[in-house]
Image: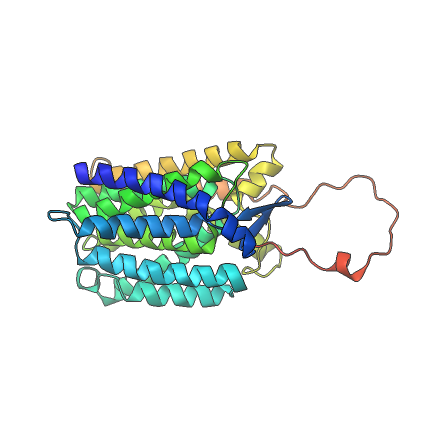
Length: 345
């Protein structure tokens, strides 16, 4: 208990400090993301990864600290995904490359002994998809950090219920590190996670949930895993649905996520992040209660139904700027005609 509190406090302070110190080097190296005509340094992801790894490994050497082999495996695999995300931040890799690399890392650490080979392979696909889903929500100030904190804390509670102290400590440290990051990422954001931070965070959270549910029924586990990550799943489902219906490439980025549509409805950036964070908290709460056996599994269907209703409702919100009276057509230069490149998707 005392170890978890101390580790979380150190992770929070260390992340906040590193995110501030690395902000200038990130600008110098042009490792930035453009948000509404602002260049936001991508130093938050490096800060979260370094702080989480240092705190967990450092205290793992202390006698009596409850970290096991699965925690070391998660840290190593998460570090590999972080490097993959850093390469994506610099050179913009294709989504299929990110998915394949993440799936390969997940395949090395999924607990096949408890899940079985078939279910383990399904878990690999789910982990890779959720990792890209977390990358997708890192497009609005405060959103990825808020959803990450809530989800990591919920997975940590599920691990604690199963007496997986190492996984619980890892999740508490990650949640604290993301909280320290939020000190710089709340609107207007001064730093952002980037793929280097959002992908390993989603990867570790997803695998932590898989470890906590390993050995349980497949159907029930699928419901709990969905509830814990309902916001990310709903956002990814909305993007895939809207792009497919519009006849656009599903892997091409665009301003069609949940936060974008809430902004089109008139919400402010902090308001959209708070509302989506509340939605994530609701799903996490149901997932934790169902995992602990305090509510029946039928309630998980309510989470799925609510997510479906939200996706169908906001999918009708236009993501294109409203048009006024038609202006006289003017000849544009080739540069103006070129499509606008949106970083995240």
